[in-house]
Length: 277
Ligand code: C2E
Ligand code: MG
Ligand code: MG
Ligand code: MG
Image 1 (cartoon, rainbow, N blue to C red):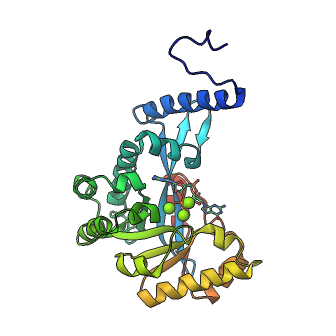
Image 2: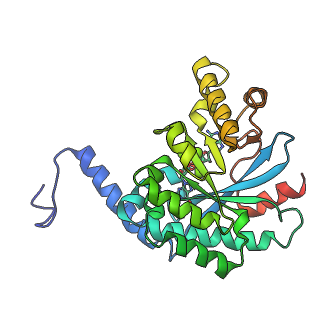
Image 3: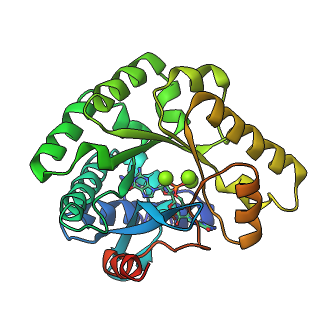
């Protein structure tokens, strides 16, 4: 079997592992051409305040695969990070999001909405990250204060001094920053105090069990208290039920994102939703 595969092929005898290796190799090849074949899409999920008014949206990447259909980022972002493809993909995301922001300025309904864009750790650590963002803002005519960059703890903690410097440079131009999936990493008051953050996103794993699990409720209350103490806005991710929203509100959380309010959608549907609100 190994011989048949040819000289340059390493062949494992566990058919499951081999199948997985083949699948990944295939996916990687396809991912490489996804951008030039224009298969990437951005979906948008609206974010709301305590009176259920839309205050912004998060851009979420999708891959419209010719055979596989709509592929979720969980299935290709890790691969994109390993292969470095995330750099060009991330740039495409930023350009596309900023083009939308430029359009949003034309419309009274969208003029003051913020658009959040996920930035991968590898992308953020690029030496030219700041220049790239500033150049895209200039090229597209997007307003910097409408752009919010979502970072994860892993993106900033490896070199916190570098991270602070980059964030301050962009913040000086009006760009804002959110800490995504907060509570799942090495969250500590120590770094939270030092990072120039505008928003903390409570990870959906805590929100999911907020009603049933007292521990998660305590964690959420602590995050909200930390945010208040440091004047950092707190938004809850993955809000699916009215009960969760009510509890969050009673704890002082004033920003929400989740299926209860709106699912991630193509921009046309998102705009329709905004018009009816
Ligand atoms: P994230 O940034 O934490 O995004 C929130 C995820 O929660 C999204 O998953 C969203 O669809 C999902 N979600 C929103 N509301 C609910 C809800 O009420 N219930 C549940 N169960 N889920 C909800 P999605 O779109 O599959 O994205 C997964 C992750 O992929 C994102 O997590 C983010 O880490 C990454 N990602 C997405 N787009 C990009 C991108 O453009 N660049 C980078 N680097 N990463 C991205
Ligand atoms: Mg995010
Ligand atoms: Mg998140
Ligand atoms: Mg996540």
